[in-house]
Image (cartoon, rainbow, N blue to C red; front, top):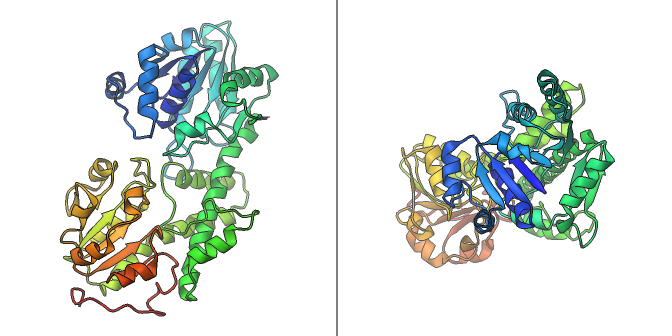
Length: 455
């Protein structure tokens, strides 16, 4: 098929490259001249494992074209995907301005019948508004062509997006037209051969499915974090609790880890948007409100542990932070717990030296250089530091030299926001250890000796 993808951001790039890789001809449209120059030079504006090679291979073959020529991209398209951003407004609602603008641009350019597919994460009812915009523009032009509208939300995990697209657990299609469902079924057939993963439903249900999925995931994370805080107080180990609870097949192990709270570009934004949507319709959102409140409270947890350890005297301390991206295998720092923590430490007068395999430059742009710096590697981040905080579970952080850390860290303290380490072993190496919800982590139950450097 001939396809156009409006938006060369995270979703647009993955969608365009993957659809081109199975033989479609895809025009990926973006207005950002600097981004287009970067893409045409073979460089991606985001880090996503496997995407660079995929995009380069299909660009080289001519199946994937990066362009700012929307009319040219739409002219021969069988379907046009809208994959632009929907950032949060100040009131928490999703801003669909870019989606509606893209719809208007498509309608101004269309010369034949085609399907407009909304892939951006949008509130329920957005496709109805897209249809209104399209029909108004076609009527203004007196254009004889017909533009249908469908919903096809993305379910891509950052760090695994290419695999998620090529081996989806579900393909959700929202449409009221059997022919449109059949067209999209044909388009996705290369990824739907083992067994039928395609679920066709009405448009509003498809739009809502994306929000409901992210709300469920966020709720699991917040509930586990709330349980972790209670586990500390009763001297239980949340990791043991996780294994015992997750072994129930009705619960499972996924998204059952305690930590510093969820972040990234999806869960925080989508929970806020769903709360706002409930408010608009006069529906209760008590659980969603609690999910959000727990996550915000969890952001402060690591800072409070560090501040308590240093007895409220953080001014002049140097803290090493391993992991700046909100999760491993991405350079995305949007709403990353690490950025929140570092901001708190800097405001308390501490200096911070961070290290991340790929997200260092992004963090430096956001945080600036006043008290914050980036190390070349994990070991260098700890040299001269008082304490280490592990914020992202990158593979290279999973088995460090703890005895070496005990020699390098002046206050010999490790704060493990991802519960990567065995508390007993870390303490046996001469380090103070605190995780999230780990047995003995709460000072009221098992106080650790305070190194001389702290006193």
